Image (cartoon, rainbow, N blue to C red):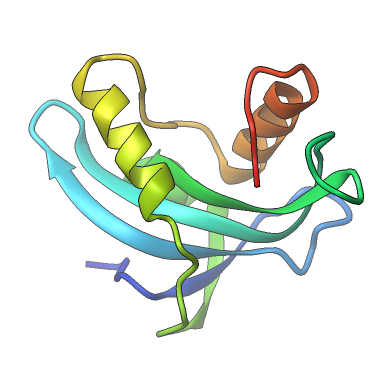
Length: 128
């Protein structure tokens, strides 16, 4: 398997976030959805009214399909890195996913960041 928990990857970033990387947090297999890879994305500049300086620099938990991740990553940066604390975000997602209220992203990582930023800006999502 290409992806392993603890890896850090470079990916096709948004303009101005070229130093951003993603980390593999957890990998799961679901019969109806296939492989789900849970990632965090760091070194971002996401507008966030909830943050002290008006920007969030990390999305700590994003569930994504393997296919969408394949289309986003460019090179493995590190084989093993320290992972952020994502358990709270994962647990919330998993509870909602099991109830049918949450999904898995099948779009590119920069598209996810754009979508999350819009959600945060309009008050439909919160990022720490």
